[in-house]
Length: 280
Length: 280
Image 1: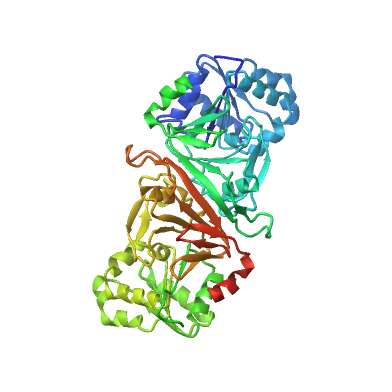
Image 2: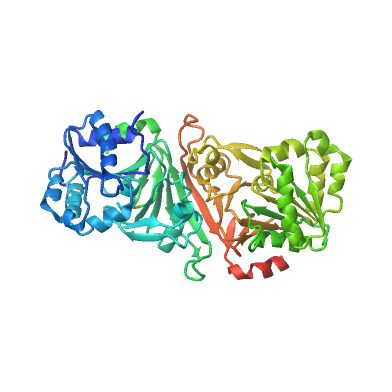
C-alpha cells in the first residue's frame, strides 16, 4: 500500500450486502490487499454480535489480518493496548450503531490520532451507517427521520465528528428512511456544507480528499446550497417547517464521480467502476 | 361563490388533521361557505368508513350541504343519479385510496366533465393522498416508496390523471414515505413536469391556475429539472439506480407561494396565510 499521501474513505449508507454479492465489502478487501483490517465496533450496542457478523464475511472474502477494536470507556480509548490494535493497520472499518458513542469515546484520544495518521498515510477508513456519519467535521445525530418527524428541518441535531472530511454532512439510509427533510434542514443552517445522502447498500469511495465515486446499487444525493436564496431558519419559531429556496440536487449512481471542490458531477458507466477504482 | 373563472385546487399530502386543529379542512369549509360540498370516496377501499370519517368532521366544521359520491363501476359513473350529485356543487373532495380507481372509473365520464365545469366555473376541487395525485395530467401510481425500493428512479409507474393541472407531478406522504427517489426519477423522464412532493397534513392551495400557496405543518418540495444536464434513463438497464444532474429543489412551508409559470418561490410569513388566502 502506498503511504505518504491522503488515503481513501469508503462511506456506506448502511445495510451493505454481506452475503450475495458483497460488492462494497469486496472493494474494502481489495484495498486492504494482504494488509491489516481493523473492525471498530465502537458504535454498536452489541459489539460482539457485530464483530461476529463482520468477522465471518471478511474472513470469507479472504482477509487474513483481521482485528477487532472495541472501546468501552475514555480510559480504554487511551490505553496502549487498544491503540496498539491500530498499529500498521491498512484499513479501519467502523460499524453502525450510535455515532455519538464513537465521538464521545474516541474524540481527542490517541486512537483518533492514529486514525488520522492511517488516513493521511494512504490507508483506508471505512464506515457504515453511524460509522458513515462520523467521517465529517460536523455530523448529523438526530432530528427528522428517526423520531417520525421526517419532514422537519429545524429540529436537526448536529455534533462534531471525526473530521476526516470537511465541508460535508453525510446522511445514511437516505431514501429508505425518508431523510431528505433533515439533510436539507441541516444544509440550510450553513450552505458551506454539502449534504450527501447515501442509500443503503451504496457507498461513496473518496480518494485524494477531493473526488468521490459511487459504488453499490442505490443512489447518492448531493445537495448543494451555495446558491441558496432564502431559508427561514432565523425568522420563525423552531416548530415550523423548513423553507429553503434554490438548492441544487445531483443524484448519482454507481460509477458517477463528484468533485467536492467544484461541486460538479460527472457520469460514468456503472460497469467501469471497478477499473476506475483501480486507477483512482 | 364567484363563477366564470378558474377556481381553486386544494391538494393535500395525506393524513390531514381531522380532530385537533383541522386547518386544511377548515380552509376547504371556508371556501364552501354556505354552499354544497361533495365528498368523493371513489378511491377508497372502504368507502362507507371513509365517508363516516369525513361526514363527522365536515359536519362539525359547519358544512350544511354535504353529499357523498361513490362510484363502483363505469356504468355508475355515467348514471344520471351520480352525475346529479355534483349539480351545483361548490367543492368536491377526493379522499385517499387508490388513484387508479379514480381514473379508471371516472376517466372520460360525465362526472369528470362536471368536475372540470365546477373547477373552471370558480369552484374548488380538493384531494388528499390518492385524491391529490389524480389532479395532474400525468400522475404517479407506484414505484419506489410503496414497494420498499424507495430509491429506484427507473421503476416509477405513471398513468394519465384527471388533468386539472398540467406540467406537474404530485407525490404525497412525501418526507414520511421517503419518496424523493421516485419523484425525481419521474421528473427525469420529462423535465417538462415539475415534481411537487407534499408532506402529510400539508396542502398546496392553487388559485387562478398559476400560483400555489402552502398550508399546513409540513413542507412542500418543488423539483425543477428545466436545467437538468444529464439523466441515465435511456442508457442503462432498468434495474440500475438513477443518475440525474442539475435539478433545483425549493422547499416551501406554510405561507410560501410558488409560481408555476416561472418556477420561482416567494417567502411569506406563516401567519399571513389565512389573510392571503382570503384575498387570493
